Length: 109
Length: 114
Image (cartoon, rainbow over all chains, first blue to last red):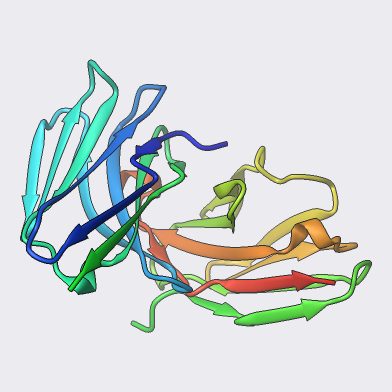
């Protein structure tokens, strides 16, 4: 069963704008991860944030985690057309990894 | 490393036939995961292995589904008999430390059951 729930389900922006996606989950976690999936391809890991961290950066990506609210956000700054993809949050409990339904991001050139 | 390798890339079969999906994880990874992706249900965790041993198969939908990992470099997911509702993309992923580290995904197998 899915663990996280992303919001919004779909997001359409112009190139150069920032994109923010949110993830809520229900149970306690060891870490939360974000993945990207291009159409017809496998998922690619973007960033991992551990339960004792509040914010993490990687290039144009910024992830926050609020364990009290059981929520996370992914910010992509200065978006590019190549960022068009589906983005998933995934939560790790013990050793398993469960994914949300994803946000479909479209970046228009 | 070539990454996680799945075969076949596409599989079209008729209802009632047996289907076998294959996965070769990244060398040295101790964890292997099988997921199913559909539009309706998203990405579902079917089963995962640690050191070739199945740890959690609660996501396997029915007895028609079975998974094995005879050695550290090979796993299979079998559906027998297949049904149209099994049509989905099946992904295999591996990790060095379960969900505590990032997962590496294969390209998936697109299964169509007619």
